[in-house]
Image 1 (cartoon, rainbow, N blue to C red):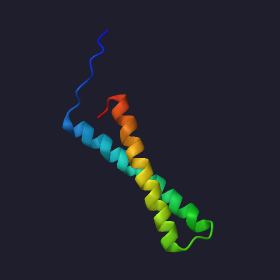
Image 2: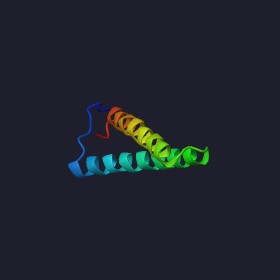
Image 3: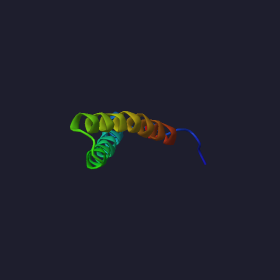
Image 4: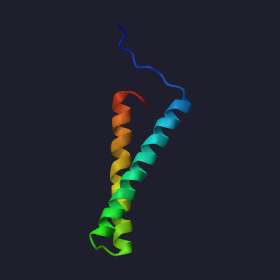
Length: 70
């Protein structure tokens, strides 16, 4: 069995990055909605959503890279 990493075409890598961005946006949306429902003002809810996006995207990209998808 070969253990050499598989080289994916650039289009496949771009699609995986797009999936990571969309998933991070979904997490940010949920974080913003939950923050707003908890009584935070709109600017604070947006900051929570931005923080959730900024934390989730590098994590997703790291996991994809570790799995060899990038």
